[in-house]
Length: 332
Image (cartoon, rainbow, N blue to C red; front, side):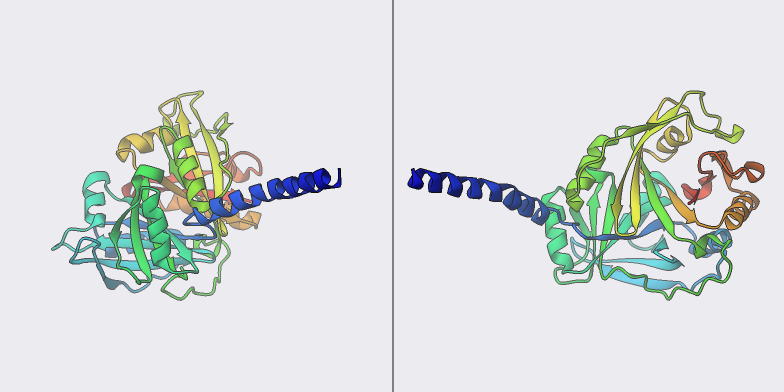
């Protein structure tokens, strides 16, 4: 009897350890576990003209541009001109490809037009091990060499876009001290929005990359459309979010058309990255930001909060179609 009791106790102890082992394996298989979403990069044709527009919208002085030259995964070099626009917890990167050499940015512009070409993550460990994990998940290395601190991996087959992996992940440019809380650049980015015709596979893939639980899509309706949206009454979306550091990724699936999200997929060949959402804690600053985006030729497509000072309603979104980018304002 004592021996049987001991065997049963040993078996129970062994079984109790099994989930822990499985969790450890699952975590180890997630190449972006603990990674921080640090930036998005917008592919542009004329960086000086784009800088004037973006800095005017964000309310900051134009930063200097710099030339970048990195090793292509298949040999040779990839060059482009870059500028970094900083927010408290995030930065926006503008990329103009070199005219005399092929590059992923040039391919993107030719295929989709101006828009968000990649999303960037900061990691604390070696970039090479992250890249190896992403390749096992279906990613294709496009820029970077073994032992380097920066790498680009095409994950279109998994989450619909390319990711940049940077050791550390901080913006290469200093962040100016905010002086005006009404400026977009003085406020944190809440999330990056991506739109898919069928979002659940991308959610599943992204959750597996980060080693987190896969969230379910939830219907968001009715939508507060403004006349400029030219949306069909009843068209709405389903959405879910996954957080990576201090910034989330929002996954959006349009239901019905036309709508701002269905229109984005049609206009940009199915390219998922769609918007940046800024979070405001001060109501007066939020109202001022709504007015500012109107003044800067943003097309107000949906979200009634802020209409004539309204304190209720959904978050307003302003489309800047020239750049394939929408800006959303969230009042917390």
